[in-house]
Length: 267
Length: 267
Image 1 (cartoon, helix red, strand yellow):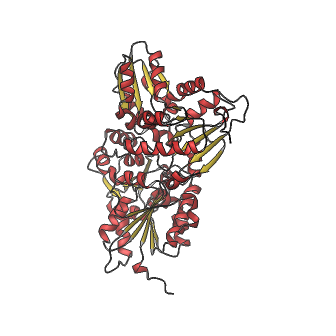
Image 2: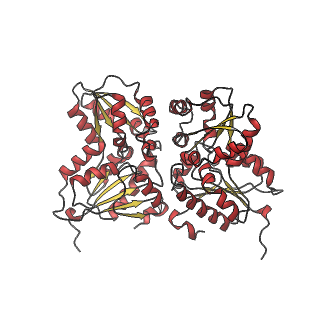
Image 3: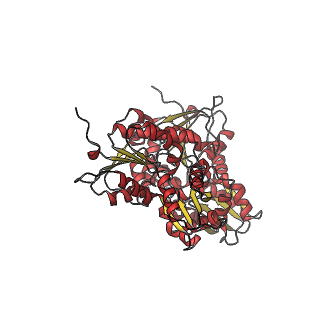
């Protein structure tokens, strides 16, 4: 029996919920023939304020599942899970694993003129200190701010609302003088317009989704031809997933529900 | 075979997530020997902005499940589900079904001196207009405001944070002159202190949780003796449920995970 070549295998993309769909969208626009498996852990969303050990356990389970599904590479399209679990998973997984943090750090380094960079994310991401350590190791000055309610603003379809504006002002009003702001959560590209309005045009925003897709695209040899199919594996309710996903990029492809309590023995 | 008498049967309490635990807590303090089944639909939480028909479908499924578990009465400990589904469920269910809306309306009628009442809730509850209709039918003047992010403030454990304060100011700053404010969502009692601080001491708050428990207590004949056991049925991940429930009243009793895609054929 021959193993399928990496080239013909799908890429697995996972997130706690629908935020990773912003990454999937950017990946698909660069790799149109590529098949993807998108894993959305909506039975356990949000990850942002859950303990690191809990998030690591979830990520390990999901990576194992995706490997059993014969993926050729895995994108952790979730900053919280990347911060908690990427170092462990990158060494223990037999296919390439990409997170969303290194691409954002590298893009900020390229974009900043003043060397003063901000990063916003979930409490888990910000309190892990991973962005701060990586940016400071490059000689940059860093301001970090947790925005724990931004995920919910997006998932409730409120990205353009006055609620979003009020929260953006609350979270960003104490910012110091920076010229670059990393959107360190895959939901936040949906809040780009409101964040840009609050911080003004002199600050450049870095979207994890775009820069991560660029990194994967540069490393991955895509199939010469293919249908570019997406299958969504969802631990919560499929109907509720479709409803929430609609606020990001919607769902194209099949939705396969998974019993989260039996994940270790699936498929 | 004899059917167990109503008196020895558990009361079923259900909510989209953990908000109903505020109602359960008030029920247990009044009915200490009573057994309860608490159903938490965390695979499909939040209900607040989902379409009415979707919420009705969820509520119907949960009521059927609870009836198969031989409950003697059902408390819909969720304003969104009460607004969407109580009229239908109250007539089609062979045991008493209580919602959280009528008790809150009745308490507001008793408390108001000026006849000017406010109500806050999810978008589903507020846009259903059910509070407004019931309060206006009693001759009261009503101001209603949807606060879609308050549920997430509570579930993220941020009820005492500056985020909660900023959102409460955002949602409540345009309030007219009222003397009573109904907390029309079972999560909101956790935000009582911050809401009271924002609106000032001249406005009385009405908690759905307290007034609903009083209504059920008045109607229910409790067992003379009993263990007062609680079993939690959870459609999402049990670990994640325990984590989120910790921000309300915690979990006492067993947690039984249910596969949401097979709910109609369980137990």
